[in-house]
Length: 168
Image 1 (cartoon, helix red, strand yellow):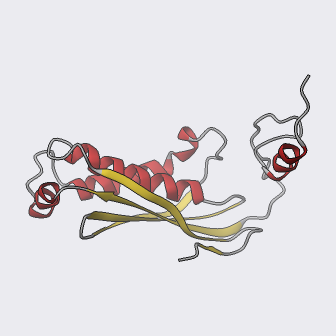
Image 2 (tube, helix red, strand yellow):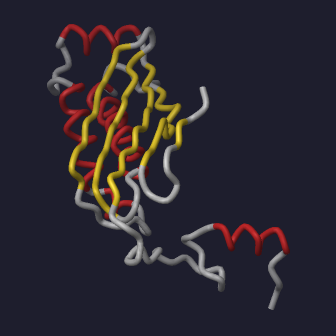
């Protein structure tokens, strides 16, 4: 049986979803205190001028991509534990998805809150990503070359880790 390298062993010790045996596991949060938690994530979708024109003029045949994206993002946040294998199911107290026009497309910001024993970073990231995918789906007839990117955690608060804010 091969031995883990020292660096790999140290890395596994810091990853809470990896047991001492190197196997994936769900973290036991039962002894953690319930705290108020919030996470904010962002994504971008860049598209052609024609796709932007269709969205902004309300001419997308499938309906309003921005409203559909907002709803899809909220629904995705609520179902994150069904998509990401080791996420805990959470009772979310707030989910918002805001879409802002940019010069090349849209910026998507998802904000998720709960009072619980684990954070909502994955829920916020999932909401922002699914919102972007929904816009792509609704406008792909006009632009299959859209680019989804810059998905990242902006900030999180609560829990043992306290406050995190992504450096600019």
